[in-house]
Picture 1 (cartoon, chains in turn cyan, orange):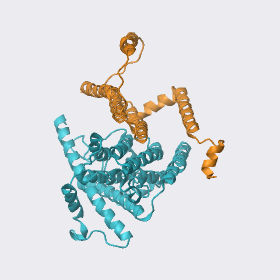
Picture 2: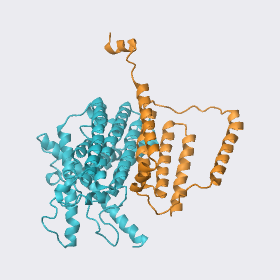
Picture 3: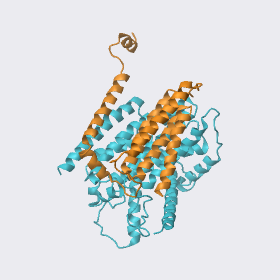
Length: 348
Length: 175
């Protein structure tokens, strides 16, 4: 496989994944509006297209056509950099996520993962950490007290929950013996659903911690203090309009999708069949390629459903409750989980 | 290829460091320091230390610098005032710094018996790193943990409200 071939295949993979990701983000917004609507006993958007399915298209067009206002007193370089940073980090983190079966593709190239990095899990954590700057710089550069408060709250919240997030994943890494996402998934493929890290791997506490920390990391309800509309008039994205605001919006939903992907890879067995081999295997290459993709999408969809369900149900945390929860409950619990997992693995 | 990447990211590193010193607004300095940290991570990756590169991004660029930026934003630090410079710094300071750097460089370049780090395709796996860290380098590891614990205790002790101050108690109970 020459360098040119590798490069062209990689560009193709990146293009497809980016398009699918952006479409996924757009339709996650629609999913949220319809689902929150049903939770609140009303229909969501239904007028544009059948069942409102063309709503994201129209929303996108609206975002492009709105007037782009830049207030006078903003610190321009950072004001313009912040949404780029936010959306960029979201799209980068999807680059190390394997979403389909391995060893399918031209030559030694893996078709269902953009980059197979040995420390893939750490790359996702690192890019999430950099994404904090998008919010912090947006709030500070907006020359607006509410934005600054939202940005400060958000930075503190994100840094606090990053700890619990990282620590909760250590249990999974201990069990798999590797930071490589493909290896972690393949280790869960032995018995179908029973060998998933959530059930057979005894990582249910870690799963719970990961979910809570991920909800806080993506600034989603009930942890959405940085954008608390009733308190902060929009928080860090108050002064942003049209496409820049849409970029923040997309970054948030993109982070949701990434969190769902990481959760399925680490706890739910990724692209593997939950029924294991009980329905027999097939020699058809198309089945080998498409069924894992289907399972992966189904599992990520279930996480998005859970996200929106929690958003529609639970009220917002107060700031001190939020910090208390992250430092005094989730972090010690994550450390206990590491100790317990290590003991279990050592004496198994 | 490795050499080109090394030159590019070493350039970013140096550029970021010099920009850090030149900028008058602290937020620009903080962002330059982030550029330095991320460039260092890439340099670690070029040496094959993938775990270290990821840890550098997560810990330094993603947590420590966030807190730096947080403090700059919270304290609303403005542009620093330019002084006229001092003659002593120009006549004695800069030559002294150059002299010290020359001495250090000479000592390092003439040292024998140091290991070799090469830009190569070899990757040090996390397993190898942890084997060395928890067997040969266990004592420095534990001592570093104690050091960080002391720093945390110091910070908490400094930031704590003084419970024995009667005026503070009065303010709190509103009497």
